[in-house]
Image (tube, rainbow, N blue to C red; front, top):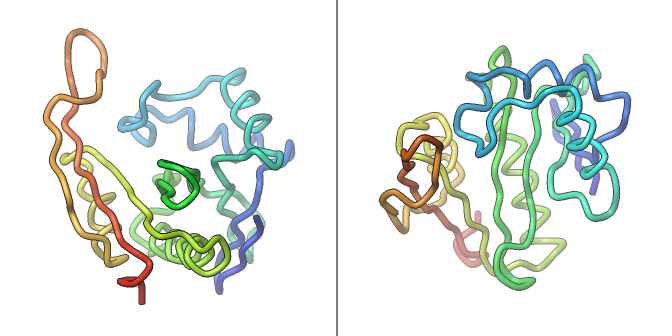
Length: 171
């Protein structure tokens, strides 16, 4: 998959992305809501290897003008081939600029128009306000609130919001 928007290129990862990916995935603040947390050098290498081929589940989000990777979009089958899950992680220095919404909208368009998906879902922890605000900007509706469904270490659990949009609702 390769998608170009006005400001972004969404594509599979390449080995040359290592430094950029390390820059944001090694941050505990950026990776706080991601199970497994921040990545080390080996984790970044594995992440790039797993997401550089045709079986990729995460895609680099690159700034067109600078050519730097500022985050990634997860997009993969969730239930059969008709429902996909989408998610995003962005470098904190590039937040509040509309990049997550722009990238997610482009990927969702691809999903509904090219893959002929019926439904796209997204999840996040209720405390992750920027993430669920992006979901709502995209026209997704909150369908569920699951209590203590994700283990987050030391006998603690995260709650989770569940959002979705159907192809017939997509603008």
